[in-house]
Amino acid sequence: MLRQAYRLAGKTNSITSSSVFIRNKSFLPHFIPKNYSYGDYPRLKPENLQKRDPYLKYDDQANKRNFNEPLHPQQDDLDMWAPDHFDFVQDSIALKWFGTFFGVLAVFSSVIYIGGLYPEKPANPRNYPFSGLAKDLGASSEEDTLLYAAKIDKSI
Image (tube, rainbow, N blue to C red; front, side, top):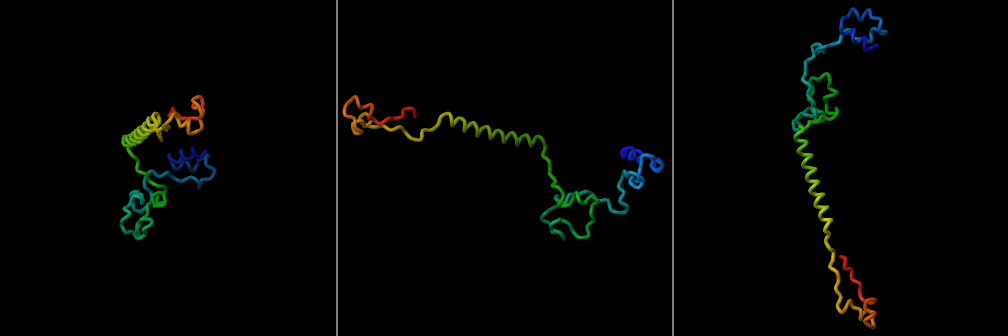
């Protein structure tokens, strides 16, 4: 219903006044403005205050404004407390940085992976004299040498 009323409002003013679609005539504007319609108020260029130079001295330093400075009609969208304004990056630059990041990540991961294939030995295997100290550990004969000798892990 409201969509039809706005469509009719754009055509002529006489149709909207005699329209049966509108329940409350004061709800609908008499015309839909297509240009700047703020009377004699100066036409200001929309300037985001976050983009102003932070090193200049302003009367209101937190909001980066001077007193008696005219406000833009959409000042709430342009002041310091509006949502942050981001400068977007070109696609080629973004792809270059993504490629650099993933390239460094791949090189680092491959170094870690290759280093894991050939681990360093933290210590050398021990070498015991006299057939693994079997006599010092209590072997009385050659048959007991295998039982009493110090076991050396040869897999390292």
